[in-house]
Image (cartoon, rainbow, N blue to C red; front, top):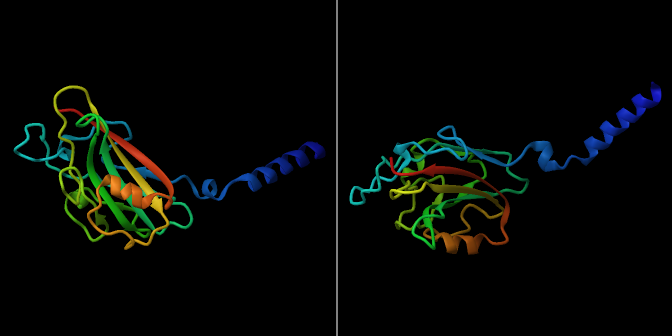
Length: 187
């Protein structure tokens, strides 16, 4: 009995030593109380450009929250991208960066307009804030939200970078990334 108890205690001690700091603090995660990963976005989250019949929503940004960023995080960047939109290039719906490490999310509707909590990049629609799906009739589209923890000071990048420019500027500075996918098709 003593030997088995010692082996078990040793195994527990060894397992405790092998836990990495990231797993000890938890996994870097992006979530939303507005939708679950892989679920359809509510119509209110769709774009509201009245000149486009595919924009059937209210352009309300979903609530987002994140937790457990990696050590050394100084700021966050977030992109919302529709890979099926306007083939072959896709559609960049939102580019934001310079989000201070102290920010842990956005309330519903908060990023539907410019905010002092982030530096606005430039979406395909030439906006510095969230613009929701305007999916044409047909197959569903996947709206990928990618949150990146960076080692950059929140003021390091100039406003107005498009997705490709922001990706280039972030290259070598992303500590870890996490994501969330919402789907949408015209009701």
